[in-house]
View 1 (cartoon, one colour):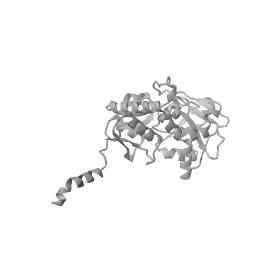
View 2 (cartoon, helix red, strand yellow):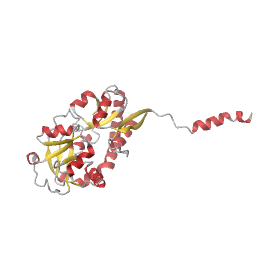
View 3 (cartoon, helix red, strand yellow):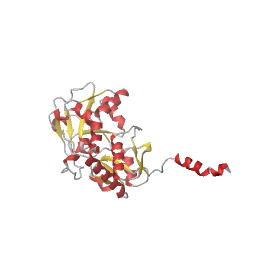
View 4 (cartoon, rainbow, N blue to C red):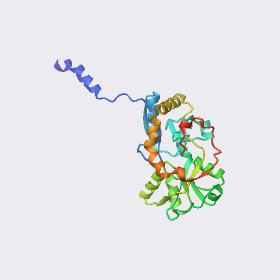
Length: 284
């Protein structure tokens, strides 16, 4: 029959329109604010997976997750997430498997304070750690920064809510909120769009040695190795640096880190870092 004679061609046409078989689903935690836009850490992870030779379908978790929840999920290997990125600590490196390449090139340890918009000159006369200890600092309860700042003698007020921190600062519950240099203007602008007016301090930068790593479950060494291999390839061919500059060069130019007074802090949570590899670190 004519239809049967053409059946092989019809089947070939149907299968040609089907999507290729996806690789293993690899889930990372959706930010707790529910943000879905592409961000640097996701783009860098996708680049590493491509260059590392793994066959993965990278997707956010269906629902937003707090940092503590995503770490718990990874530690207990419950299948909700397979990779996270977070600040390294002794505790995290004991419970999870780190990929010891700092994805923000150490910028995560350079912190610029947000202050209330009616006190933009609050820190103009601060010249050292003791001067800064006169002011109260806000942090999220489960961030490592809370322990770091308290270990350096600061009065730290905590919140369990990320967006709540900015509203607490605006309401005068504490004096300043140090944020990552690469994110501080973005966060200020986002809060302004929500009616919360804050100012970026123009005088100081707090610094403590730190690194954000990708982490996997300790049951997934092959995944950690794929990410490590891909990051090393991206460093070698310059694509890591190009992506870093694409995201952060303009912010770093306007923040003028090299012209600010640097308040050096100790980091008691810090495992050994690959400091001998100068190409892994940003320096103002």
